[in-house]
Length: 135
Ligand code: AMP
Image 1 (cartoon, rainbow, N blue to C red):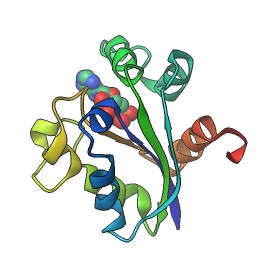
Image 2 (cartoon, helix red, strand yellow):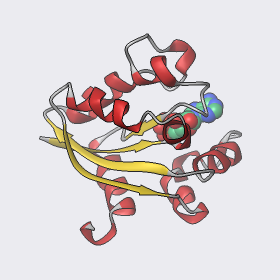
Image 3 (cartoon, rainbow, N blue to C red):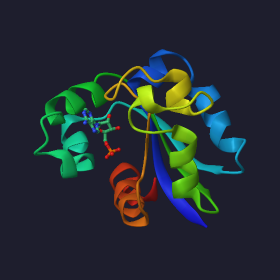
Image 4 (cartoon, rainbow, N blue to C red):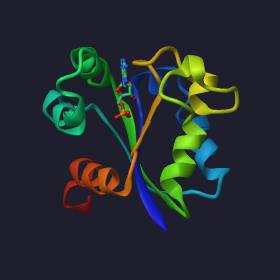
């Protein structure tokens, strides 16, 4: 069993497809362990995306992820990290196939509907960041 931190980004919430996106995961035998709505602070966004702090797209990424409400989840299941990344599709929605979340709802490489942890180590770090004190 693995766990992953999944974020439905502001475009997913404003397009009112939160329920539909959750269904993509549930249909692949994954479990929604935790779920909350929140607005990400600039401080939390900086910590979450720390690995990208030197990239030219960092400022744009921060502006976007803090621009509106998001749905944050812990999702568990067998091989969950890879399974979730396959369900999401590639980072750039233009490269994503229909039937993946980004292929179906993505706009561009910034406005790309969802985030999912890329490794067990990232998942542990991100779950701690977003579900402090396990709450
Ligand atoms: P990742 O840590 O790979 O999930 O990347 C975090 C987010 O940064 C992605 O979901 C994109 O929204 C954004 N991102 C990644 N690469 C680029 C890029 N080349 N240009 C603009 N945004 C990017």
